[in-house]
Each structure stands twice: as structure tokens, then as C-alpha cells.
Length: 465
Image 1 (spheres, rainbow, N blue to C red):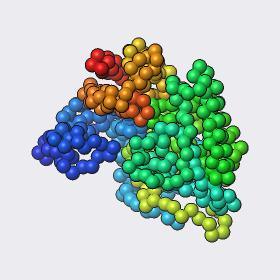
Image 2: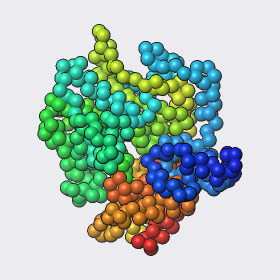
Image 3: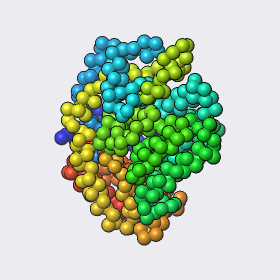
């Protein structure tokens, strides 16, 4: 496999990085890092589970770009699907019209989705899909005679997107504080972080029941006639991969049914192979009222997202003059839909969901070896989706102070891991964690590589604390 980049800007790699420093406003980025000449990392090529920078250095993509490139980089069949569709019909909106690829993809997603989730509303990303689901919940209850039901319940530290509504549902204070006031009516309950369980810390099932019952408690407190929906990720990302305890999702479903509240599964990250199924809720055996998804739908080769709603939620829009006054110019874009169809073809022809299920235990066991390090407190996750929580003291589970986390994560780990050849995320949306969500095509050789790099860098991190 070549280690030389395929693209270098006129004037060389340093000139390209300088143009980025001067003109590109990168997302969620501290630009002070580059203000005085720091080299902006520029990724120019990908192949399989690896990426290359503009200096010709290869890295393992331990985050699938951004929990996205499920089938790996460099899949020419996806590029060819995009080119073919662009030549045939490059763009047409779904505003009162349809085009073949959106129709075909909607039918396919409805076939994958659990239960009677048969109506697909296309967006261009996950945050837009969450925004769509909240707006739908509000209008659904207005149309069915319960106009006061508009509030949402979501979980602490959960991330659901950056649009104003989705950001309100997000449970990360630092992500929201500069944009407040946000959309009112979004309330938070505990998440499923068993490692730091505030109750039933010796019994995972009892803890799950406790956490689910906090949702019922919040609905009662706010008033059942005012709550429209509960939003949750099957495996919560922010905070470091919190899987659902046994019985948790089933109990949330019971609570939503008892109070006539919609259960919305935000599968922006969890869908399309990440947990070993097209939809994680199918893997966990629970049917929500709606699913939001994006990312792995096209493996990132073209922007696309979707909200998939039950027949019941669509029912009021089938009669009279009522309609959903909501949409996006590029929702269900023909090229993106064509790429998504080709991406799903790869999932089926290569058995990628089956591959994840066959290898998830080996991945977990390989990462679990890191627990012999004094800095590793917990390794948790599901499928090909893991978080490694870092601690000062394994016995007491003492975490790092804010200043210590700053020095550890941004002052050392982020750069050290990248320099060692592993692109992943070292973050503290909650307690300090390293997050891993590689392309779902990898196996034991790559598991070992991830573990070896993490072991070397974490050992060094502990020595300099």
C-alpha cells in the first residue's frame, strides 16, 4: 500500500496547511493552536482503514472519520455510483415531487427498520434529523388533539446535534452555553454510565431500572400532558460509550407507552453496522416510534440523513389539508441517495453486520488488555464502538481535575496518539475518555495495532502526570 499522498497543493504541503490556517474555519477547533504557525493537519487520502496526510504519513483511522466511514475509505464503487447518478439527475428536491433514488432508498430503509417504521423523511445530517423528529412530535400531538405535549426528555451528557432544537436536546452544558437561550422544553435525566452509577453500583440490571425510572419521574414532574418525546441513543456516545443495561430500553418503551410519549432512537452513530445491525434498536429488540440516522448511511461518501417514523405518526398527514411544513433543499439528494444505496449493497454483499457480531468479542477482549494500565479505569461499549475512561486512581475511580484533563487530553494525548499513527478522539464530554469507532471492515490485526499504540502512549502519559 503506497505511503505517498495523491494530492499536494501548488507550492507544496506547507503552503496548503498555511492556506488552511489563513482561510478555513474548522469545526469545534481551537484556532489558537495554529495562530502562530502551528501546522494544520491536512488529510489528503484514504484507503481501507487508513488515511494519509500531506506529508505522506499513514495513520490508522480509529474513528471512521467521525463515526461514519463504515465500509472504509477508497471504495471506488461508491464514487462510481455518485458519478453515474450526477450524470443522470444531479439534483431535484423532494418538495411535492420525488425521484427514483429517494423512493428506492426510503423503501429499503423501511425494510430494515423495526416494527412499522415505514415513513422516511430525508435530511442532510443527524442534527437535522433530530430537529425534524422534535418538530414532528410537536405537530403530531397538535393534530391529534393534545396541543400541550411539546417537551422532550433526554439524557445527561448526550449529544444530539447543533441546530437550536437538537442542541436543546443535547445534554452537554459547554456545547450550549454560548448559544442560550435555546428552544425551551428540553429536560435531562441520568444516563447509563454504570462505571459511575449514583445508585445500584453493584447491580447492572437494577441500575438500568433505576435510570429508566428517572424518565418516568421527569414526565410526572413536568406533567404527562406536556411531554411529547424521549430522545436517546441506543449506545450513548458522549461521555464515552454507555451501552443500555439489560432491560433498560424495554423499560423506557413501557414508560413511553404508559404516558403516551414518543420514544425516539437517535441512531446517528449507532446505525449501519456500528453495533452489528442496520439499526441498533433491532439488535436490542425494542421498537421505537421514530429513528434518526445519518453518518454510516452513506459511509460519509455523500451527506445524507433521515428520520424514519412509524405509520401512526404519519397517519394525521394523510387526510385533509394538514401537511408537515418542514424540509431541506438537499434532503434526499439524488447523488447522496444513490451513494447510500451502493453503500448498503456493500453491507449486504460483504456481510458487514455479521462481521461485527462475529468479531465484537475479540475487539472488546483486545481493548480490555489495557486495563492492566494504572491510567485505564474502564473499557466499555458494544459492537465496534468503545470508550476507554482514564482515571487518576483505579481503586477509588478518582478522575482528573479540569486543569489536569486539559493537560492530559489536549496538552498531550490528542497529539501523541496522532503522532503515533492513530486517529481517534481524546475528549472530556463528561470524564476523560478515548473513543474508538473504526471502519467495520477491520479484524484482529487492526485490533492489536490499536491496542499497541494506545498502550505505548498511555504508558507515557502516566509517566509524565
